[in-house]
Image 1 (spheres, rainbow, N blue to C red):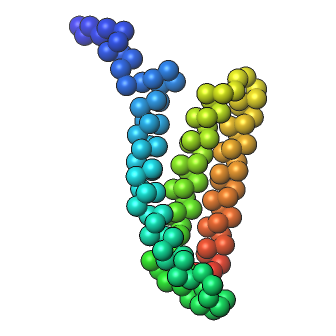
Image 2 (cartoon, rainbow, N blue to C red; image 1 turned 60 degrees about the horizontal axis):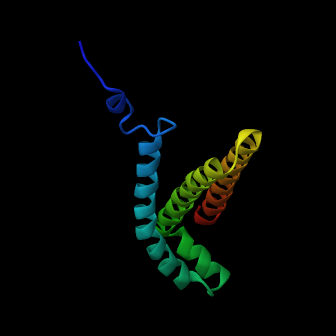
Image 3 (tube, rainbow, N blue to C red; image 1 turned 30 degrees about the vertical axis):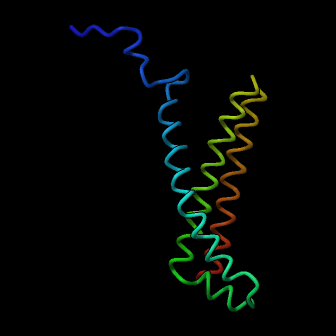
Length: 123
């Protein structure tokens, strides 16, 4: 027979049951963004101000295309989770649900639009 105290059953869960996972997801995506965003900005800055063909050539390079896709996907996913946390902290009821749905839809729409534009440029 296993005896678990209330504290042991709740350990690592948080109020919603997924607090620890959410915390680590935000930490990992934040560290990942801290590494890839400066690299992206340097490469993007080199392409900035060039002719149309030079910019297309820069984004057609596989490393730049993959890096741009990662920045879009990870950055907007990080935005979605952070905005959802903020909404959960400061709103209640139906407003909370509507705002979370809106932020999620906005995040996915921006990700899809950005990846589509990147595919049109890179391919």
